[in-house]
Image: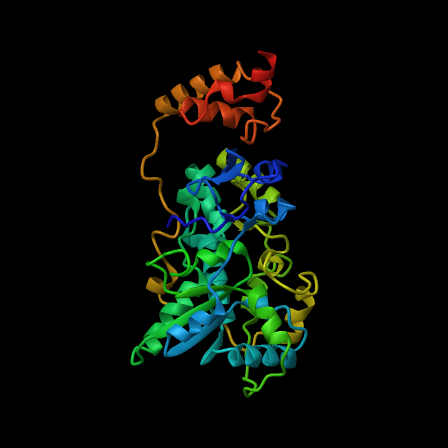
Length: 393
């Protein structure tokens, strides 16, 4: 399923520092007429450009909390990554009660579903799948594979996101109610797209994605008025969002952090990691507990798991196949170029590249000279756009 780009450019005029362009792993950003242009087909919502821009000219926003007023009954889904920031069960109960106070009828922990998905991943890797399995519940990694590593698509485990499964279960349980709104608290920019709004994704089960940092001031300023809920976290679910706690085996390769993930996918594409049965990948350092919209200390989350779920009191639920699996989690490209077409394109790019200075200065507004050459071959840029060549002339 191709995701929409959530990153938006907000400045009237770029300051030309080029940091965002240099930071993009898929060359989705360029500059034209003193404004940053975002190629939505290439953007994978990793947020690197947002953190690189010292002018705060790029942002990603979810739905506002005021959207709860559009529904008669509202449910908030809380991921294990957020619960893992709590140092005790009392703190977690206070947090859940405070979230309910800001406008929700129900606040649901979905750690049990996250644990079930992790265990299904292991089941695939340990024997069901004939080939090695790549899995990630990070939309950045999913889109990275779609965009840069299409040859690995067949190795990707087609498991649904936990928020989707949880929302489907909520809708079935509340089928007798009208106008139910389901909200998901997001720990990173990429997950803001896992909802119908605000990015117009009609196929999603969740109605609205809300940034965790947007509600943080609201739940920290008040003592909870609602009755504390009785929580029973799934230990497996809490482990699933932290690379330091995911069960390890010699044939499992866990990786967190964008650079490491790209390096692993580079090697996997050339079949250099075939001794591993499972590649379990996270774009954020430390896993989802290190999400860029998260508060708290991702390192302490490892210890918090022991306080919240000292032992597995309940195993993850047995979810039916039709809930766990979804064929379009990762999308095939509409048109796969033939090898001959690709070689012809690369030949043209290399011919243009020979004419460029090769300084990768980004003065033209493109990430480097090769990306500039590709733009020229596609007819998007001209050789005259190179500032270095124009100075020489």
